[in-house]
Amino acid sequence: MREHRKCQTSAASSQALICDSNQSKSLMFMMILRSISVLLILVGSCCSLDNGMMRTPPMGWLAWERYRCNTDCRNDPENCISEHLFKIMADRLVEDGWREFGYEYINIDDCWTAKERDSKGQLQADPDRFPSGIKALADYVHSRGLKLGIYSDLGNFTCAGYPGTTLDTINIDAQTFAAWGVDMLKFDGCYSNSTVKAIGYPKMSAALNATGRRIAYSCSWPAYEGGLPPKVNYTLLGDICNLWRNYGDIQDCWESVVSIIEWYGNNQDALQPAAGPGRWNDPDMLLTGDFGLSYEQEKSQLAIWAMLAAPFFMSNDLRTISKEAVDILQNRLLIYISQDRLGIQGKRIMKSHAIEMWKRTLVAGQYAVAILNKATDGMPTPFQTSLALMNILDCTLGYDVIDVFAKKNQGFFRLNDTIYLRVNPTGIVLLFIKPGC
Ligand SMILES: *[C@@H]1O[C@H](CO)[C@@H](O)[C@H](O)[C@H]1NC(C)=O
Ligand SMILES: *[C@@H]1O[C@H](CO)[C@@H](O)[C@H](O)[C@H]1NC(C)=O
Ligand SMILES: *[C@@H]1O[C@H](CO)[C@@H](O)[C@H](O)[C@H]1NC(C)=O
Ligand SMILES: *[C@@H]1O[C@H](CO)[C@@H](O)[C@H](O)[C@H]1NC(C)=O
Ligand SMILES: *[C@@H]1O[C@H](CO)[C@@H](O)[C@H](O)[C@H]1NC(C)=O
Image: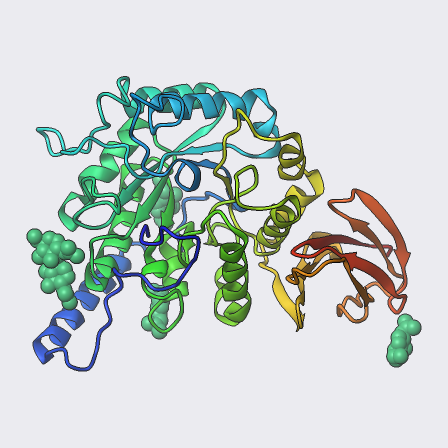
């Protein structure tokens, strides 16, 4: 979704089709027919997206938030959407240690194709910006021990106006991506309506499977349908996609991050059960290392994304990123929490004034708890809690409590011992809680 140029998010998409009561009966009939054909398509694939991929939330780098549709390689050769940019970021992921932390995807977003398909009807990369082609780029990325993600759009055009994937080109595009050695597809939803989406997203899932190549599948579908039941069926999404954008595009500012956090918190009863190994809610890219967030705010985003079991796709410049930003993106305990193999998404368990508390259940009786302070006034807010108040009661002996960003053990706490915290304005304290039993 590319409608929001200003630093604000909104769930609304100009693409979303609202089926109002004035629509004709023949249209309803057509939609029923379409639904039946959707069901028929699904019969073949039955129970789950069984491609074995993304058993923990994916990690890597995705171009969009930082580089957008910058195609001006003449004047901005180091930052334009080109094979050069993706190769450089692949080099950085390997040489600066990111890959060892799990950041393994290098993902292309919109604006990589030529303005027209080739004579065989296949998508083709822009010949000036990708002179070696996507296959060569995939080979390069693989040679560095990384994976390549690509982007397409279910619709007449991509959001930025490049050739889209229409229902009749789904199979050919899936085959093209597989032949190039692509490892992941982000499938956007501009320039199509709800009927086309209800057919096209499952159809692409089946088409990717039919290629025989394991290609992780990111569906923007729910974000175009308001992100919530009954319009969005998360059981179905889990059956056909590995991850999905639920909400509007993130922008490089705190207001955007807060609006996303609030939306996921307010709608957690619908969203939290949808997530699990191989099937993730995606609140969009990480902003750490960009321009709009303070250091405190960067930590807040990272911690809540870890609580949400969200994908960790950075969208930044790994050539110039600060030491502080590297430190928090490569925080081992943060990544351990984010990658917990149970894959249970955390929930907001308390909200009072500017403070909210999030809790995520981890393997081996462990927990992560995050205390976020959305206040913007002056000084760190004192906050007292206890394991009992967090409803962490299984190990009656007590728990070690570790401050993840401070990298400090706060001590061993019995269930009713008071835990004293101070939470910085627009900041967060992320606790890793380990049983003494
Ligand atoms: C395709 O789907 C089948 C059935 O769900 C699954 O066993 C197989 O691993 C899938 N193949 C790929 C390449 O995703
Ligand atoms: C896509 O193109 C078709 C065929 O030209 C047209 O009927 C349809 O309205 C277009 N859809 C959108 C959302 O632009
Ligand atoms: C949705 O788009 C398709 C293809 O462009 C078109 O045939 C159909 O009439 C549209 N449906 C609605 C409900 O607008
Ligand atoms: C949601 O999708 C699942 C799987 O396809 C299906 O069994 C279920 O009936 C759907 N639920 C609704 C409310 O349509
Ligand atoms: C904790 O405090 C509650 C309420 O004051 C009390 O019922 C409970 O027994 C205490 N638990 C422990 C382990 O001390």
